[in-house]
Amino acid sequence: MLPCLIFEDEHLLVANKPAGLNTHAPSPYAGEGLYDWLRHREPRWASLAIIHRLDKETSGVIVFAKTQAANRSLTDQFTRRAVHKKYLLLTDRPIPRQPLTVKSALVRAGEKYLSRPSHAGAEEAETRFLPARQSVGDLFGKFAGVGSHGAVLAEPLTGRTHQIRVHAAEKGFPILGDTLYGGAAATRVYLHAAELTFRHPATGEEMTFRAPADFGADARLGLRAGLIDPESTNAYRVIHGASDGWPGWYVERLGDYLLSQSDQSLAASQRQHLDRLVETFSARGVYHKLLQRQVRKTKPAETSPQLVLGEPAPARFPILENGLHFELSFAEGYSVGLFLDQRDNRRRMLTGHAGAGFSLFPPGPRSQPLEILNTFAYTCAFSVCAAKAGARVTSLDLSKKYLDWGRRNLALNQIDADGQDFIYGDAFEWLRRLARKGRRFNVIVLDPPTFSQSKESGVFRVEKDYGRLVAAALPLLQPEGVLFASANAADWLPEQFLEQLGQAIQTANRRVMQEHYVPQPPDFPITRQERGYLKSVWLRVR
Image (cartoon, rainbow, N blue to C red; front, top):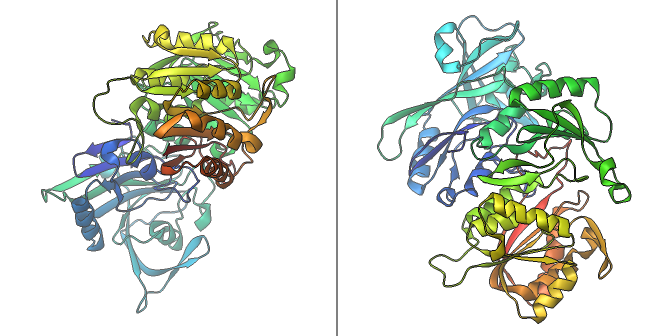
């Protein structure tokens, strides 16, 4: 089970939503919310339904229905106010010493809601507040208070948007971090859904689910800890720039090491934070890489990450992702051997499950292995996942060094590289050659660099030439085969990316039967301060 999951049966899925994650995606091309991320992750979760919502910065217990019957039952219970909810909030203002009940009508005004006297025709919001005493310590787990801050237990008797936040502010104790409603600035909104009680939709049994609050923990790390299973993955992004409060600074955990990246040398505050991360992850060493625009004009030794803390890493060291092993290196230049933002897409290849109702591979026994073409294969991470799923993979790349690296990655996972194909050369040239030979593939992976140049095909710019790449690949894609297309050009809008793909497919007299668009994974959070850059789509093409 994922770390964030509290309970699952054939009717329900109960989770502990991390702070900093929406319940659902706010727009089609924004980062996935917990609901979207879960629904597309496992086939048995494809019919998940949202019953209630938690704000992005609110953590805690949330329930999803897995069947229509469960959806109807839970929706009815929420509508009849038969569901009992308990929240914990933290404030730096004086807290009520006696139980307090607030009733009002909530009126939307831009991004916020205003509390107005109840009146006929208005939907009423009602919240009960109580001081959080020691007697409820079991409910709140590790929470023991922070400085002079006070804890308040909130029991919303209705389910209006923002009602706890509005009512707490109205009575003079706005939630810490909730600057929208007058709370003091903090690293998160300190509101946690601690307990949820309802009747099971099938048995009628009363069930209570709890998630202890840990307000002393780093919410940014909590988001990763809730969604990434440490037993199967130890490589992910820990700090994603402005989205995590550090504009221009990016930090990744790579197994036993941390990799820091920015366009400047480390500041004192960044070094102090890295010291804390070293302790959190028991990291053996920390490297720092200067982000540069003119990478191709510099030598590998000048672009390689440099050791800044701890002990040096071996020339090659392994990491674990989705239960598979990959070799990384800090001594090979600008790139270390794996792009972490494709982790969820590699998992889709590994499991054969692109999204809800979208299976990559046909069901049932196969007389012949599936054929996968991985263009711009780099160190063949997608190839490892496909081969582990039982496919025969052709890996195509312009670098012999990286293809050899890919062979080592296959060997790390007990996959015989001799059973796979490796092609060294220009992608466009080889797509033409393979088409002339009549080769056909069940799945084709297109994940080109933003810019490249070769003698055979000249300059390739992703925004300008992606359609040309798709057109070259389509003759090799079997009817009803799957095309995976990805691009990381930050200034290229998702709509423009999808439009260019669609035009190329239509021009080739092919038709999209199924489509699943996915943004970058949750450890690369998309915010107003840190825009999304990675665009990926799985397409079944007739």
